[in-house]
Amino acid sequence: MRRIREADPLALPAAAAGPSLAQQRLVQATLKALSRAASEFERERLVVPGLGSFRPRPELPDQPPNQPVAPRRLIFVPEASLRSMRAERHLWEQALKAVMRPLIHPEHRFVVVFSAKSACSSVVIWFLHTLGLAAEARAHNEWPHLYRIDKLYQRPDYLDARDRFGPDDVTVLRIVRDPVERAASSFRHALGTGYAREAIGRVLGVDTDIQGLSFERYIDFLETEDLDSCDPHHRRQKHPLEAVRRPDVVINTSRQNLFESLQAFERKLGMPSTDFAQMHWIHELQASRMPRSVPAQGDPYRMVLTRQRAQAGPWPLGLITPEARGRLERLYREDIQLYGPSESA
Image 1 (cartoon, rainbow, N blue to C red):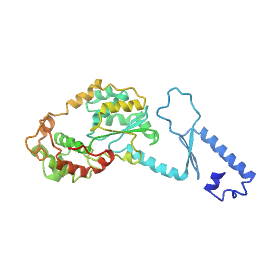
Image 2 (cartoon, helix red, strand yellow; image 1 turned 180 degrees about the vertical axis):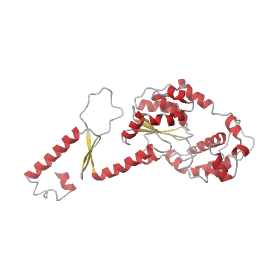
Image 3 (cartoon, rainbow, N blue to C red; image 1 turned 30 degrees about the vertical axis):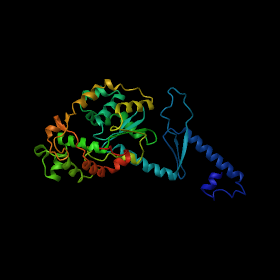
Image 4 (spheres, one colour; image 1 turned 90 degrees about the horizontal axis):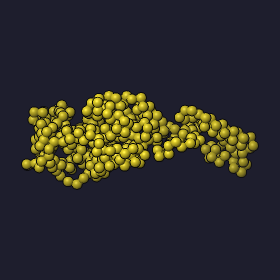
């Protein structure tokens, strides 16, 4: 009665007079009817027009298996909150369909948000392994992202989990890399694969396949880019999902051992521990990508490097000079604020 009076003072008489017997019975009958309807409702939510919505409480991720079925636990969300929830759900759904679409685990109810050039191939292989799909994915193609794009995102269990899980239903794992270190990696990748050849040519007037490129000039190019919408390999790491749901666990691959951190995450969720020593696909893929690195003769920041050196080496050490670091920290300031300060030179 008190809550009803607080919500609408005109709904019941003043406290001194007290509600009439008929009003008490009306309120009690209404609450009983709502409670019974909500407990028997088979859909995700029971909406009461003009009041709000009854919905199930999220299940705890560490709930013991084979536990007896408990009575359905419900929470009531007022109408004003429903509007906010609908807006949040819309943002969540859009984030799950972003360019770098997160990975969703249907069984263990977690989401992995990764970034290009942040150990993403190793993370995808690990994720496929947790689903029992690693062998199938490798048979599809040695590059794990091709299976992710061609097959994983079309799987019925993935689509069902994407549509069914909301931001409160999952654990969010975020994989990132130091932005400055990541930019140096994206420079070698851009030069070695040519993915940014046309864009760099338009901006700098340089054909990287013919003339090569220095790290200094690559940063010149980055300074002209919209780093929130450009190629994912040098886009800022902040993901749209993080505007809706803060990550529960963040692994920075520049400061933490990726494999040990993933095993700790598995323990947190009660998952089987992955034996990364036996994950040959990851190790073979990484071995094929790492050119021999040597101390540079001269100024590595301004040294013109070729596609061949990016692919096979030798690759110069020391690209991240104080000048390069300062420029990159200005470009990726938001990532540094989100995921921690840049490493010292």
